[in-house]
Length: 434
Ligand SMILES: Cc1ncc(COP(=O)(O)O)c(C=O)c1O
Image (tube, rainbow, N blue to C red):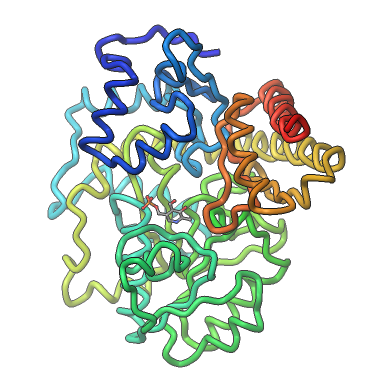
């Protein structure tokens, strides 16, 4: 499906075989072996809009896989691959002389982006600090919560994923941290959606409650209506900071700008104290992550404004690109397009569920963030392989393997959805053929 002319000097300068070998020798041999074992041509080649193509086929002479990207690295490619306006903004920024900038000095682009974000963020969240990636931004959120409350305990969900840096890692499922002998000291986890469990844990030692609005790696979990409203009340009652990880569910993914503010339930508009963003903030071309908070939290920096330093976080060039992305994405017509496409996508998935009720237990989601729950983990994992064979790049949820996650670019059109559904049905039929 991809019709870009390949630039031989950059993409495809090496054969797949030699790249796999180099990757194995110089990056990660276990990852290279994993993909070799799965048996697909696995080196990313050309990409455009919804489509990603592998560099070569699995064997010599075999056609390379041409996949519709329903993975989007968790929303990195909200605007699809290499959106022309984003590419132009990146080039314009470079031509204008922007680069990373100096993290000690004040910055025009960082100020402008933060101001524009303040206009979009819910409630009085109006201060933004820049980071390199989501993990660092979660770390910063936790640091701020601890700094302002002078308390240590952190509550999160037991199927959570918040990154692999220090504090963020502490809030993750045990799979990511046991190997590194992470102590049980300051982190407590509760089942997502269970207010009883949370109320028992939240106390006068708690600094913050940290949840993804829709836990993605946890299996696209949709909490009951009122869940986040009650968390807000509990936090207010106990003087606890409420942190929303909107790394995947934010930025228009649900058809609303913010998942936490009307994206889950139209009338439930919760304003947390801190919102963390990453992934889609990059527009797929320049890493960008942010930690935005209500003004009272800024007090933490009073004694030392240089307390959180991120040398390349908030690159001026990146800020310029992100501003363009937000301009496109925050337009009411863009968000209503996401809503319309989300409705179509969800309805079609429901139909597939009805037809394949022997395999699928539930489909659930919001906007263009969906999970298909299979009857067990084996089916969930095999479905990822079936999807790849059928031309869809999506994957099972790492902390809930019975569920496969689908997050296509938000620029999707009805004909794309039709094609995706055809391919998904093909992937489901592959089970019957076994
Ligand atoms: C919900 C959520 N929070 C935080 C992160 C961490 O982001 P990063 O990989 O940019 O550190 C991720 C990454 O997958 C995520 O899904």
